[in-house]
Image (cartoon, rainbow, N blue to C red):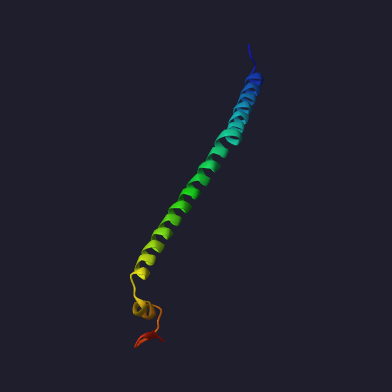
Length: 86
């Protein structure tokens, strides 16, 4: 029959082995996957923001291209006098 000391030692060794196993799994598998996922999310956010900026720039370009010389002059804060911008 096992003594209480043997059972306690077995429990401590078993708990230690389980903790070491889960720590190894965490370090080798789960943690790198979480880092990769975080990087993927950051890249997706950056791409989304870049697309929004490009779309805004396209709208701005369309608005500027629709302006005539007088419109460009006034949009830039100038004053249209007869046939030129001052």
